[in-house]
Length: 90
Image (cartoon, rainbow, N blue to C red; front, side):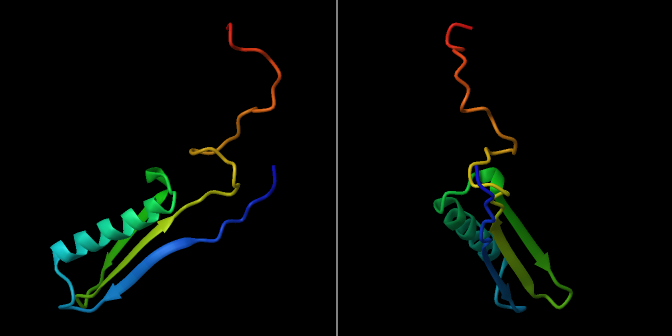
């Protein structure tokens, strides 16, 4: 087991007032999420943030929260994969 400090993966953009509609915003978020998932992220690791600003602009960020270790199972914590105990008949 080695310490793994993953590079962040994020797709983001800012759009000015008039450059987006609710439907185009929804389509953009769906596209960004699909791209992150295609990179190998689990659904639970994908974070989506949409910020609507007072001036009518919007900021969209979809990122992959990879965790602290490369071999850390989804949800955190490690399992004992090196155990030589036979549990097949348990």
